[in-house]
Image 1 (tube, rainbow, N blue to C red):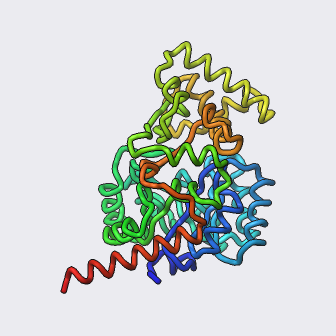
Image 2: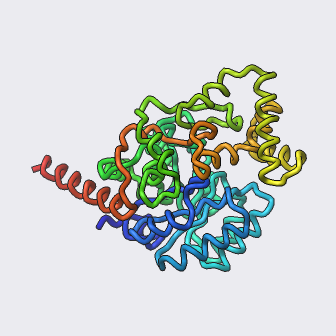
Image 3: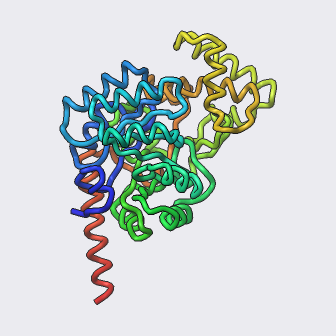
Length: 351
């Protein structure tokens, strides 16, 4: 047992968080994580309101343990989703982008723990000043949207800047990593790729084998997916996106947009507005706006449809250090056992 400000704040047994990965972190994975003593987080950003509500109900049916829900703070229905989280008694509200001050206040007044994910010291300072209860800080090694600063530099910088619990993300998969994060002053670790590669993950077996076959050099950070730095597995699709010129890139974006439009039922206007919401304050070309709008389709192609050849697969560099598919319970027990062994070894070095 390792008690930290995170375990005390949320009411979990172990200081381990499963991140809200789109199309991956559904009810089954979240419930398995929370039931094993960690904090599972539903990836509701890629769900409709109805799907999010259903996932919450399913997790509650599977376990009484605390869990969280991740939503986009810039979504048009963010307030509606917050109201549902409060009504359903969700323990933790997680955000990929800094939530508005008003959302934080609403959640905190209802007793919900607010934990945004951030990638820079100034962002941590901002949400802490607004009342966030803790932050997840992801270094550049992490998968999905990420920044340029490695965890070993960003983590201590953020820990020194705020007085709330800091959860380390980016490059974690073992008990040794947990101890390293704690030594920097973190209150726990958050893992995405490691939980994706469990037997409780809904990702198809063929796609998991693609991940397991990768080395630590087989990821790339690209802005060609949605205009924001995004760490993904290297693939022919990503290489094609990277090498495409302006005209070719726009054509590919339009074609992908047409496919996504057909699947989602969105109009072109709705898609463009969606793309603009995903700009994150950056200037994007029209090709990037359209790609941003249909990024969910590219993720779904691999994670749900099992088409590794057609989809984009977010991944941390740690993928090259993972070679098995344990259950969430087996994974968490292993991490905690390794952490205890590491702490014992360090204690021996002092004698």
